[in-house]
Image 1 (tube, rainbow, N blue to C red):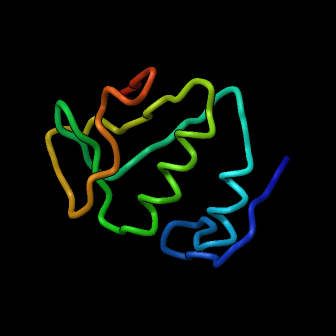
Image 2 (cartoon, one colour):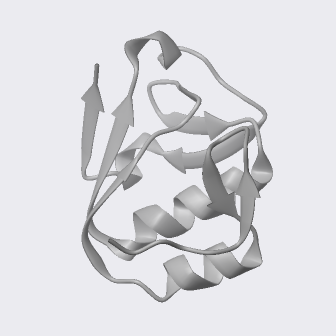
Image 3 (tube, rainbow, N blue to C red):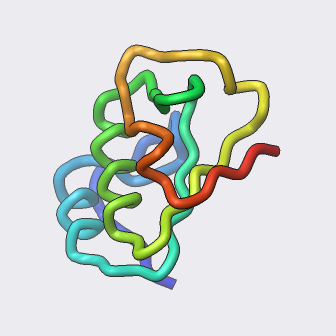
Length: 94
């Protein structure tokens, strides 16, 4: 188990900030599973810019990337664009 450091976000129950981003950027992993707040047919979104940078770094660290989404978030958008849906190797809707 590897934990990243940084600033703890109670809202997201996750680590964010520059230390977290730098550590993620140092990783090379087999599989990166990323979720987000909203998606359309072509784009994924998140309402906080800081989470966008962390999630982009996570996707880029993986040899294979999976977008894992709750079906209720499909057909919505949010303030910040995360990544085009095509940038993920697989999309899983629950």
